[in-house]
Image (cartoon, rainbow, N blue to C red; front, side):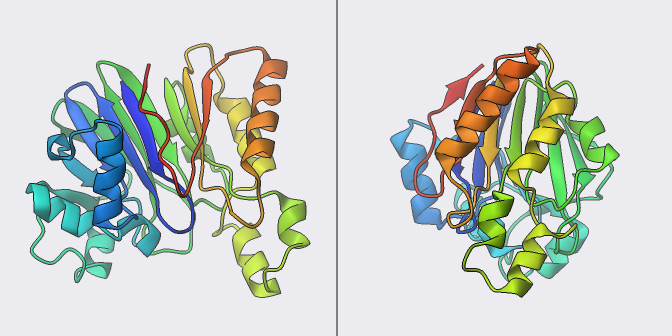
Length: 256
C-alpha cells in the first residue's frame, strides 16, 4: 500500500492511494497543472491512476476532478447527488455513481462510501479495502458518529481531519458566523475531537496516520504533530508514522 497527501487544506485536497491493483485519487481539489506537477515530483505516474473518488462537491475537493479524468480517460466516482450538483465540472466526463452507504467493487478493491456530516449535499468518507488491508479517509466532518468509528476501525492507514485548535479559532480573526459554522455539527473537527476519534481507532495494526485539512489560520502543523504523537505514545497501543497534510507541498510517497 502506498499513500501520499498531495494537498490538504481549504485551498485544495487530494490524496493518492495505491492499494492492491487499484490506484486512486481521493478528491482532486488542486488545479490540473499543480496536481500533475506534484505527482511528477514524486515519480507517480498520473496516467496510471484508475479513478478519482469524490467526497463532496465543494471546489477545494473537485476543482480538477473532471479535467484529470478526461485527460487520462478514467472515471470520476461520485454520489448521484454530487454528480448532479457538479454537472458543469463533470461535463464530457465518465461518472460512475454510487449511493452513500452502499459498498462496491472496483478493480479488485472494495470501496465503501459512508455518510459524514458537513454543509454539502451528500458528503462521504471512504474506506478502501484490498488484499493489502484497509485504508480509511474522513475529512470535512462536523461530528464523529458511530458510523464513522465503525467504518474506520481496523485500518492500516488513516487520513483524518484535524482542522483547528478551538482556542485559536474562537480568539482568531474570523467573523462570528464563520466560527460558528466551523465548530458546528456540519463544519470541521477540532484537534481535540480528532484525538478523541483516534483514541477509538488506535490499534496495533495502524501503520500510517495522515492528519488532514489543517486550517492555515487556526492551527499549526507542529502543534498537531506534537500532540498526536504524544497522545499515541501515552496510549501505547501503536506507533504509526504520522504525516501532517500540507496545503502547499505534497508529502512523501509512503509505502506500508
